[in-house]
Amino acid sequence: MTYKVSRLSCSLSDSLKLVEEIHKEKVRFISIKEGEYGTPHVNLQFNILASVAQYQREKISENVQFGMSQRARAGKWNGVKY
Image (cartoon, rainbow, N blue to C red; front, side, top):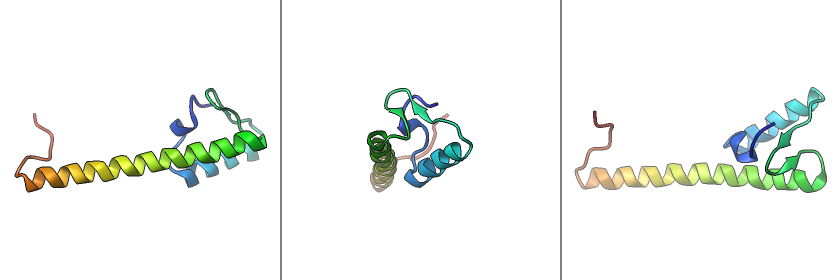
């Protein structure tokens, strides 16, 4: 059980592998927000939500890299300040 599909993993392939392993063990996979995996409707919803989670992770990474590049170009520090 997970709260949301996006909390399972931020990788579509990892999410699919995890759910497949869960089903091999004859255990139900349930998302509190989205429902029980296994019906055609929820399977489609799961795939879409897992894809969106991966997209968001990749977009955040891209934005962070861009921000760090901009700070470096401006001569600013890109690390932790203690």
